[in-house]
Length: 174
Length: 119
Image 1 (tube, rainbow over the protein chains, first blue to last red):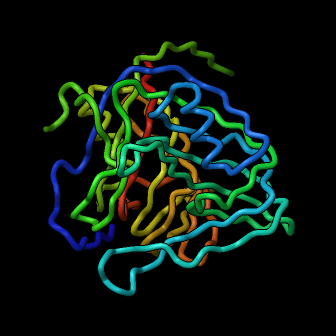
Image 2 (cartoon, rainbow over the protein chains, first blue to last red):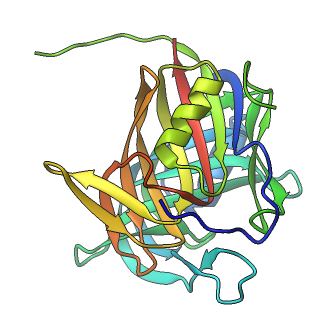
């Protein structure tokens, strides 16, 4: 298994595990607006600010996504390439997302998804915020209570990314 | 034959795997450290250095990264063993699917994972 040297110092532990309660499961239906904004607003409107989300499929009226590439500047191990733009209608096959807190504590959704375009070709990648107009999308959110993800500076990868936060799991390494 | 097992929830785990941790054995280790033997994947977002997915009878596709996106992650931890399937996208946005092979899927930047713990 190939491993890569990250730009920053290796931080410990290598697995961050936080154990919380189940704060409920919520079914979400979106019929308009942007996918990420819609998920964010629907869940925060229901009083939820930390959740794992499974997209159950649907249709979009267009879709911008990005896939990874080697960072040519060397500042990071990998970065995103230029967005790929799909015209609608696009079929959403499924996707996974995390609702957490952004750098200023604001609600933020990080989402990857798989889609089929009008010619039947599969696509997928990192969903570009504001660039996934919803036709109809349903999802299930698993609400995590007392634990979740918050964006934090990560010197090792040289990114500001979601960090697992909250109560420490019993028996977990410090 | 079929087996139906009702289950009760015993909470949630949020897990971050850092670079070069293996997806499969890293999830197993995270659950072990939390004292969890059974759990369901509710959401997983992240990336891999390289990827290896198994399918068919003993077949396997190896995809070279880095920066392979984990698009969807499905599966469970059963008796402490992670059974994970899903889809990935390579640098050219080609999509692959299958079962993640243990010790062959190193995390690139991060894995953000939400598990529901089964009582």
